[in-house]
Amino acid sequence: MTLVSGLTSVLLAGGGSAGHVSPLLALADCLRRRDPDVRITALGTQMGLEQRLVPARGYDLRIIPKVAFPRRPGGALVRLPGALKAAVDAAGAAIDETRPDVVVGFGGYVSTPAYLAARRRKIPIVVHEQNARPGLANRLGARMTPYVASTFASTSLPHATLIGMPLRREIALLDRASHRAEALAHFGLSDHRPTLLVTGGSLGAERLNSAFASRVDELRSHGIQVLHVSGLGKEFLPAPMMAGTPGLPYVVVAYVDRMDLAYAAADLVVARAGANTVCELTAVGLPAVYVPLPIGNGEQRLNAADVVAAGGGVLVDDSSLTPEWIDEMLVRLITDQSRMRTMAAAAFSVGERESDERLADLVVVAASSRGAR
Image (cartoon, rainbow, N blue to C red; front, top):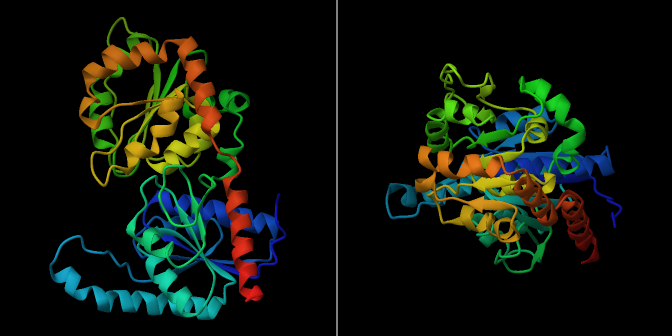
């Protein structure tokens, strides 16, 4: 049930990576669909993706200092109190100017200052955690509010309600079959061919790029065409076609603005297991090979656990994603049409497509609590 908003102003805090910015924008879009007059302001840093994506979506972005919490003793730890105070003061100034009914945090560098500034002003806080294993900012924020939302059932946070990942409408409501012809034409791909989408995200593309770059002709020889999103500055030129191999496209692009069309074109995806990637692929019902980043606290492996258990994905260690694995396993997988259909149905069965509305409802409930005090 969609709740009547009654909101006049909302402050959203989350920046740095697409994992924080994408759900922030999905919630902003949802709130604006409900009430075009609600004032929406985002907090971000000078260097994060939000610097480009938030204004491009038509929302006001306020910059505050980036505060990273050091994991070991050193000069950064000594400077932390002063840096945190400056960031909290900057977040507080944005709150005082925009007078939000509620502050919503998505984790990352700007959320902790936003939570602290909001608590000081007795403004309701909503926390949304994207990953199966929560980060430090949201572990702190969840202690300050009963309004906590999680993406995965395995997430351990106080007061957490499972809602899934807020997604853009063009992804959440995507009918892949009806857009496939448009998508293939958009990327210069052929019809009636198994289509592989390879994407490693902004940070995790190196191993995927090198492994697949060495197997361009092997994939072509099995009738497989590829859309390869390499990452900005990581583009490569596919090897020219060898005599006797089909003239199938191997398209390399640095970045894709229309991921809905990339998903519509694909039959199978090879990707990292960031929370947003996992949730988008399950929402649209795409089979995937998930290759978790071998760094961090292991959250990517946990992010993919549910869809892999359901049969909608395959988990491959980073060190195992080799040219030989592509030859021996991937080719067999994508050319097995029956298995592709079964995996697609399994992926779709665990997808969540209304999480933006659920988070918007939680925001309305939190905002109404302020007047109830």
